[in-house]
Length: 80
Image (cartoon, rainbow, N blue to C red; front, top):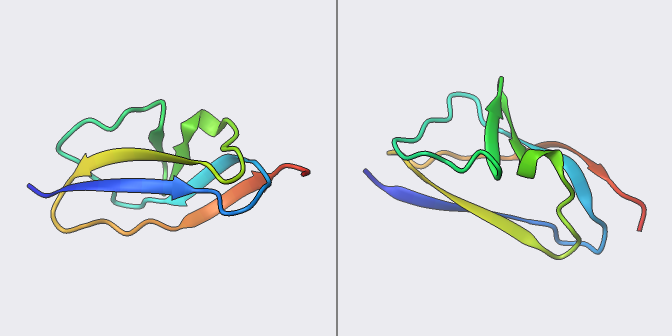
């Protein structure tokens, strides 16, 4: 089974929280750290809704074939 690394990056100086990615039908044969990525319906919550600071990133691994494409679905951008 192929293993994939997902890196979520904030490309501006503003922090974002309650960051969600589209992840309908997401699957992995290896456990994904729930403190980083947890499925909630058709979306997945990143870092338990905590802030991802500006110009920073968080990563996780999953194993599935084929690769699964995820896109931002929502977030709250903090004042900066």
